[in-house]
Image 1: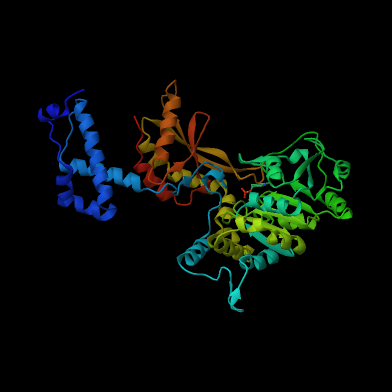
Image 2: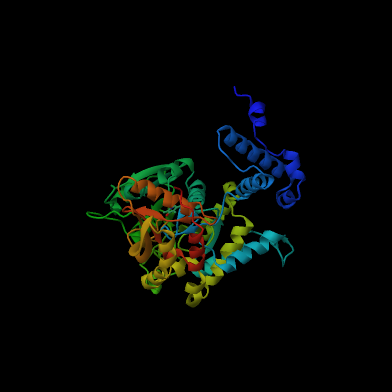
Length: 473
Ligand SMILES: *Cc1c(COP(=O)(O)O)cnc(C)c1O
């Protein structure tokens, strides 16, 4: 063991914790973070400096340096874990990056109910207890034409609630082509199992016929479910039974037909030049008795799962004690309410709903934005990477419209020493963007770091961030 005191006396001069805390320069830090936190940060800074000195490094160890290091520690430690990032991955509705961006109207509505009391479950007219679904039901019925609606925490919860309420202990036939996994932990067979019902696999992966469903029906059948092909496509020699035929079969046998729609856009997207995506209204028209869909996918709202359909069935869902465990909080209801109000004016929806605005941005406009940023990037990446604007394809994400991409433009950073070291330079570029005060998330493709600008609305902010970029040597 080395004798620290002896080394210290041989020229090491570190100020004491007390002396640093008593200095005027410490006051602003103490005001911002509190005495305990600052004391701990100063201790840690002194410890690091002591180690560096023991390792033989010559460092500046004055009070100002210790406080500077402590301030860095405090700043890093006070950053919230969940923070805003800039999504330049090219996937618009990105589950890992929080899915839909809320419109200002929804953010204001959330802030309003979050700040104080609200009439969440209070009937202002009658002066008594009310139902929290009431705040969303009218709008949902008006927009979809359904007879009843309820809302839960997300679409996975919606599917679970439907199965647990209507199919507990019973059988649920589903086409083999639809036994899907969505985003890692939502697997139809497992959800069925956990909801207390037995999955009956129908048909084959690529072809399912109405006779397969007919054969699957038994006295134990509780309902028939269809899962919308959301994050994959089956092509080639395929056959899918039209929803109308399954509905007719179900109704002839007095069984509910449930469609898990997944993305569920509330308007016909072809009106905005986007590919057609099945709507909840289409599903009802085809004869579904209940339809479930996410509120934070194409709908462009907060995380929630919407269930619409027959009133007697929705009433049973509401009476299930599980509903209480799966219900939405007031902030979600406020946000979804505000988003649904925007839908009542489809002509202005595109400018007001960020998801729709971003999905419908044309490639030319995105390319112009990319070119306007070239100088900022080129000067920052001088001698590190070649900077160019390239055409690329954005994807909608969250399983919506899986086979379709949207033409877009990206800034491509191609490391100049592309030999063996190229891979690690790419990794460092990626890491440096992720380490920005507002992290910027791109993707690595074809030995380049790509920033698809489809989701970028503030080019100035990105230019400013790039100026502060620190790329590790
Ligand atoms: C996304 C999706 C789900 C899960 O919805 P969450 O809102 O993420 O819980 C379920 N089913 C389908 C078909 C989906 O696309």
